[in-house]
Amino acid sequence: MPIRRELLRLHIGSRRTGPLFPSRQKGTGTTPHVLTRQRVGQIVREVARVASITKRVYPHLLRHTMATRLLALGMEITDVQRFLGHEDIATTRLYAETTAAVLQRRFDQLTDPAAHQLVAAVQHRRGEEAAVLAAEFLAERRERRFTSAGA
Image (cartoon, rainbow, N blue to C red):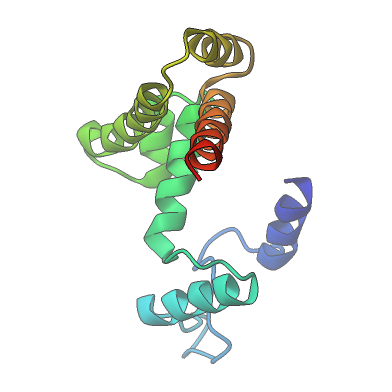
């Protein structure tokens, strides 16, 4: 994460206002051209393709992922609301419900009481994001065990 922060700092330079991602084209006066929504989408898809990501990736998914992770890491929902620029807290709550829904779905996939205890312990010690990862790992492990047993 520190490397990304430094790359962003390098990208922003001494600017304190203006678009985060201006285009290479020069605007009129001191205002640069801003990348269009379509161009940002193209860039995101190209980066995903180069990284061999096969899942459909688009700019709003990155925004959604960031918001969900911030909530999972314990950032207050009102701070996430301000970070995202939402006027209504109900919009931000959709991200919080998604995080809880993912965790609940993973819990539902686990039928072993020991797995429930393990995930609960991980959540208590390391937070919700770690618990989601633990639940996913256990669910995948369980699926592989059942798939190989049935084969």
